[in-house]
Length: 341
Length: 261
Image (cartoon, rainbow over all chains, first blue to last red):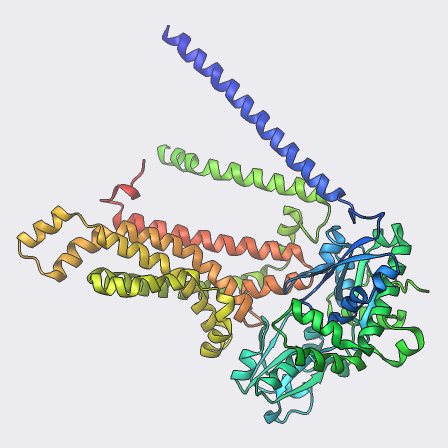
């Protein structure tokens, strides 16, 4: 009797174990299935309509003014597009969103496009807002520095993100005397400490620092020879090949939007200020003026706003290879298209 | 033989989970086929081996900051807990404000920390302290207030001084609770350190794991990000194990929570 009970219990345990194993296998299969679904998620749910999503790599600020202008003044709709503009948080790797089909278009930087392609992500730049790299180093005027070389050759603290340009500057100005700490946004530390310098968008933080009583002096990184296209509109290679007309329309509408914003920034600044009240209207206006020469250059006057050249992409790729950021496997010619051509 | 058997019995469940997790991660990474989002365990292991010198230097920096933050949390948390337990007036006045440590978003006070301590080890350790001190305060207070009333009466009956009551009765009976707080704090100290390094860490040789994670992410090296995160988790696990060992040595011979079951 007792043995029967034990045997029955053992059988029941074996059945339970088998059932658990089956359940486990089912869960694994389900997980794999959902992963597969994720992989196959289309580059756009709205591929055949004019609805597309543009994800920005920061909040609504003048660096994105032309996109809001294209939306507000009808350039997108004129080209058959209904664009949802979505600002993203700090540190958003927008190329990953593009590569995984979470967004149709996004803004990024040229060096990030090269890094993305090195990682196997098929992303393509289609429009470059800033022809001159707007990133700079902001220092206190009282320190009497003449160039970025002085920042790296003196003591103090430099707040910066670990970007390609930082590697370039560290490489260019050895031995690095300044302590480099991670930059997490804002200008409070800079204002509080006289021996602090920090990275900045020349169209943003220096203006803010001046408004708050600081004595900022700015050096452009582009002047040192590192000049990637910035606020670059990207899409996936798949999207470009599947919807070339839509990509052409996007580039053309961006060009019109930026033309409009460069000529008449005030109405769009008011709209963006409504979406981002952290920046006051006066700063919006000053930044729009400050960024104009970085967007409109001799090159764009000849070939149109947002245009890109193979030579600039090659130069940047060579610099990144030299710095060890990417290897020689990345073909700079595949990183961009000028859709209008 | 019995001891070896008991070690095996305690090790096989987590080992099975570990192997299952590695298999699932491998299948998931292969199906997803986007190494910049999810690398395979093999790729993570390869990069960990390839960059072991840098990663070990980062681990050492992070370990130092986490230990400083954790010990500061332990000492201050127990001291504050004792002060709060000593007087109900002090407790009512200050206890609600200790919750500040639990809720403060480090990112909001990062500039202050940097200005007070300068970037690097000091500010990072302070982050670890802020994030991990509250559980120690709360558990110390709870332990000290849970002393057996009958034993307290007995001590009073025999004329024991307040100091003797604290040292010989309240504190020993609060130890299990204090260790629970220290266990929670050990993990939080590592989290606080890595977050602190994100915000106020220094770049350069021997940069902490948090700085390395940010840098690798910027360069699209997801395999290195995973390797650094894994090492940070192992650090948390090691600190947790050390507290468990200390608890076993200090109170294992008399308290049921630390005895084998």
